[in-house]
Length: 77
Image (cartoon, rainbow, N blue to C red; front, side, top):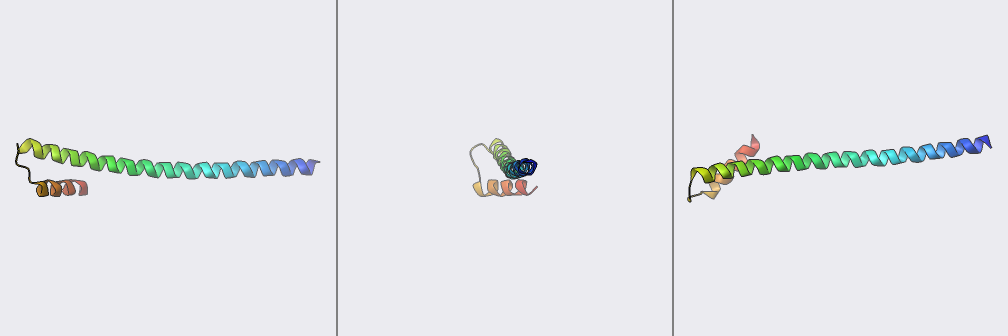
């Protein structure tokens, strides 16, 4: 009977370990997703800043190619 109880305990422990491994993988996936979202947010903020500066400097004459080039340059920084 002790052997049976020990086997049951080992089986439960293995199941808990598998659950923890699954949760760990989920945490890693979520961290990667958060990192990607932060990168995208930073990129969007950069683009918005460049566009805002460009619109502020030029009333109605906006060179879209120049604006796009500035966005790309800011993103590289």
